Image (tube, rainbow, N blue to C red; front, side, top):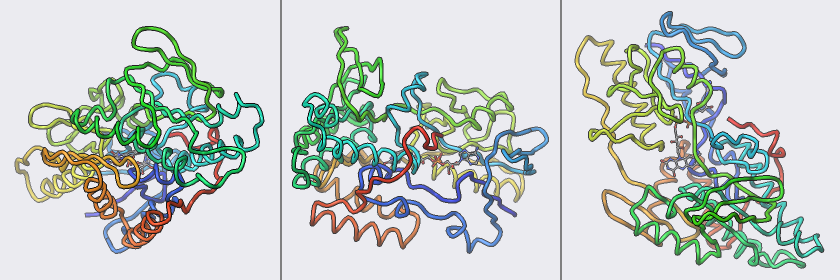
Length: 405
Ligand SMILES: Cc1cc2nc3c(=O)[nH]c(=O)nc-3n(C[C@H](O)[C@H](O)[C@H](O)COP(=O)(O)OP(=O)(O)OC[C@H]3O[C@@H](n4cnc5c(N)ncnc54)[C@H](O)[C@@H]3O)c2cc1C
């Protein structure tokens, strides 16, 4: 069997720790690993850099952005998702999201620059706007960003400025759902909200953001009135939609899609009518045995990838019926700063320090390269002892130039 791994990036990105890059805890190199080195010992696999833009599913060919063409016998598509601004793409410039390394460094730039600008600002109104941070979305990403921002303001930068007092920073999380972490059990949401409050983060649930611009954000209260928050730093942790290639695949195969473009796959993760095309990960809308859609999380993506690979091997070894894809849910974890996390593992609801230690262990173990695990472990150890953040650098491109998909 010959395997080709095609990606428009030459590295694997461990997205669950992106917020740590955005908040200056880790550097991009610590959560990325070159694809070539990951697969260097797998002799039947070649890695190619290129972006798939089109597909002819009947002829079995892929077309790349640079005009290159590839034939395949079996195809696994896992192009993931990109941030959705719910049709308001203009908000992206003022409210960057957290999906790529470029966006993470752009957010880091924005956060650290806001404190610098506030230090020099003499107008009290403008200074408050620089020290007001708004996060739109209270899912795991929004909560993790909020917790890290709370720590930066309360601990990391506490003694570093002379004109401003960083703990005075106002950090606001806005969400349309009635509670934070809406996919978690309610008691864990309550714990998470309590931890956020302890870090000086205010959560406004049940609100709808109606405008975002360079000066701040406007939202609609549950009762109907509108509120304006002047803020120079609005961060987007809203929903996701599928990538451009995902849409093209759906168009070319006529596959059914959900509202956000996710491809509704067969129980064996193939595209209806195309038994040699598998769709896995965030792009797929797969269901569990009860018919409930599986979440867009790393575990589903990893198990789906392993299943599709086994299914292809099984098919090559002779026609036989393969068990449908079965997702083994190992649980959910979200961290809300130093020593605080919530976890729902096999029905056990954990919170506080123990959940945080579980989070630490799991995230270290899933980092792809052994070298990164050691580096991150040492970095976290130092930061835990000193309250510091090793990568507090104002670098990176302005948000508008960042890679957005
Ligand atoms: C900030 C953040 C935090 C998260 N935290 C967690 C968490 O704590 N726990 C958890 O389980 N999940 C978490 N997730 C979700 C998890 O990261 C995703 O579910 C998982 O990465 C999906 O894997 P995937 O392979 O489908 O897509 P991705 O990991 O996004 O990989 C897609 C790959 O396809 C490549 N690609 C895209 N389009 C093309 C193209 N046209 N041609 C060539 N290559 C292409 C991309 O470069 C990328 O390498 C988080 C996600 C984010 C953004």
